[in-house]
Length: 427
Image (cartoon, helix red, strand yellow):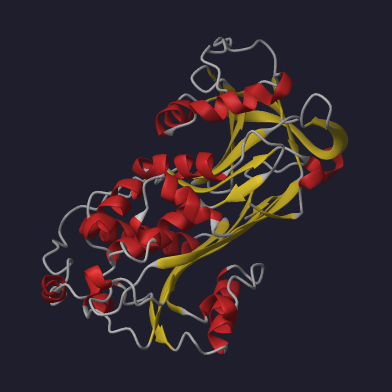
């Protein structure tokens, strides 16, 4: 299985942000760094279940889930790039980002960020079970007078360059391509950077093999029901085995875990009942939050299941619609030149984010993966079935690439229409 992500927030050069750029008190504040007095002896929690609400809320706002569209993205990639912006923010911009990201404060966020960075890097180096690359870059134009604090806080991410140079887009794209093993090559263009003074970028790549692989000779053409009238044949992978599975009344969905080799990362599939008009899928998404998802994962228990899962690939490109989605989630100042306060990056240069870019790709195969809501609860049997139950993904479902150790949602998607799978989709 391959999962590939490229994401960038581009700050546009502006002379309008006078209210924060000329604030002398803020300038004086730049002489110190928020991380100067951090205690290095404190225990760092790598439990990221607290930011699941950010991931799921963004999914609901960004994805037109009541339409027959597929979708795939990395909420953690977007969270990471926004965390970069959070480190440079002050005032209401900082407050909005802190609330949206679901974090405590800058020191705690940075230490957790570094701990996770180290954890994922060590996993990739010490295990051959899967590959997980996560990388961040903060590109600033050479004309921006940066706070010296950045060299302490973003020592491994900071790049100062001439962003007006036409070759900079190629340099950024090469870094993204290297991180994603050549699968995402053109994240930004020279036109994107022509009037910019900051680019906050994240790239992610995951390749994992199923702990229990599907046999290719078992893959058959079977029907997939997008809705009552839209039906198509798909390559359906099939296997029978002992998988962790549950029936969540809270979500109104069957839930299945397909672990990758090593078992620290799994695909969690949420399969609602097929109800006329796609009401089952819509109702499930409406109920989905960190609590209902967490409860469903906690309730998984192992039993014999016959699993049927389509073989598919999805491509996704999201542009400035991402800024609109984040605005609806309360992050408003960051995208407003007159209100954005990123003075922890630079007290002299007005910075605001004027463009967002997110690209993603996922491929699911037999070997693995290489990247009106109803109020009534649906009743399911909770007793163990006498024979093997069936988990047949022959109608719209959600899938989550879940880090079982950190409880982090790395990637998330919806498969609703085989006819639109494998095609580049811009939301």
